[in-house]
Amino acid sequence: MMVVSLMNESNVYLQDLSRGIIKENPVFRLLLGMCPVLGVTAFLINGLGMGIAATAVLVASNVVISALKNFIPNQVRIPCFIVVIATFVTIIEMVLQAFQPVLYEALGVFVPLIVVNCVILGRAEAFASRKPLFRSLIDGIGVGIGFTLALGLLALVREVAGQGTIMGPDPDSAIHLFGAGFEPMGLFGQPAGAFIALGLLLGIVNVLFKRFKIQ
Amino acid sequence: MRDIFRLSLTLVVVAIISASLLTGVYSVTDPIIRERQEKDYFQALEEFFPAIDQFETREIEGDRFDLVYDQAGEKLGVMATVGTQGYDGKISYNLAVDYDGEIIGIRIISHSETPGIGDVITTDNFQEQFIGKGFDDPIRDGEDVDSISGATLSTGAMIDGIRRTITQIGEDILGRERKAFDPTEIVDGIYQGSVEGTHGPLTVEVEIADGIIKRVDVIEHNETEAYFVDAYPEIPEKIVEEQEVYVDTQTGGTLSAERIVAAVEKALEGAPVDKDDGGESNE
Image 1: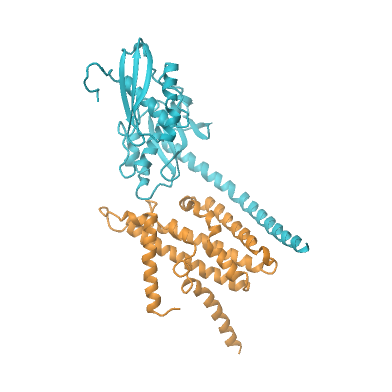
Image 2: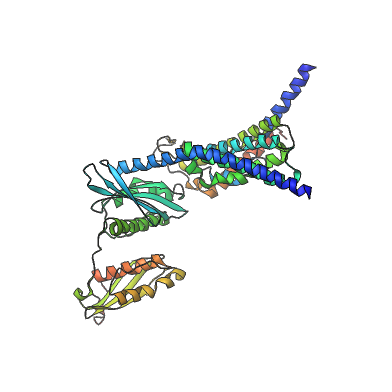
């Protein structure tokens, strides 16, 4: 009996973790938080940096909101959630500026805009404010990984096509994939190219989901 | 009633906790951020002036100018930290000038120009053409420096910004005087000069008679009308009134005003256009 209930329990956590990555991937399945997705994915490093920053905020706000769910009255829950999220975003912003100034410059206005990223408020409202603390933590990690992977994938496609490099834009770390004579498709470095790349990736993801019958 | 009290109390408690947390993090990270910025800044100074021993900072209208001295206390030059409006937001950069007023280096601190297009402003290829240019050079697109086609707005903004900065360094920091035009030494006649404007050339006609600037007219322009009305006819009137080419160009249309002044300068540098001749101008 003991073993069964343990297995059931770990199964729930596993589901919480994988749901955010695959079935309810915030970018490819729910199309949430599109502004940073399109705005910062010109370079792989920026995309991953944005994903990690958003994940940190998401996990922290999920935990805190879940812990406070009995204390916060229903009528004022949204302002409270936003204050919690904004607090963590501001902390992340200051920490980035102090320890990762290059990334901070590259992400620019998109760091403070994590506050209004609907992925984060969405998880707070739909999950963390109803579920126990540990499950909210797992959910935050799962959705965060899903968001980061999606940003990383899109940024990889855009950087390879649009710049012909990976690990740019810093010339010290940039690896040129196609040699010096390569003329990259500049469009993919532009915001318009972000839409095109995202559309192509969404198409591929939809085909894969159909093929493997993931619901 | 009690409900309202409970709701506001919750918000107050949440806000207080949030504020104290932020204060804590701020007090830890702020010194690190400042120290890092200072270090970056000093590194840039050292890069431009390897013999730097100390520097003196001056602030003029929010821009920062550092006068750099070597160990013997001799002035080495000036590094300016300024910003200019680019294609997509502010470009902030350092401009280093030696004591003779010649540019020795440019360093872009931050910009948000389009990747792969406007970011050519960060390349040596673009920046090198400014090296050695000075206070007495025109620093104008198509004359002694070139914008880069495809990124005309970003590179043009840098050219205009650098010209303004070096003029400011020359006049306010190094105390240089501009070469003055003395109308009494200019041969009487009608002069024409043109410079590149917003959407095409801006041409002025200047009439000098008996050693006096009689009139200044803009005979051709393609400026943005909303800004141009602030520069014309105000600037030509000022020039005639003060009998001075370099009048104050701080108007609602500073760019157009600067272009009028530059066109007048070019006109007076050239030969007079003889209208009775019926021939073409000196273009």
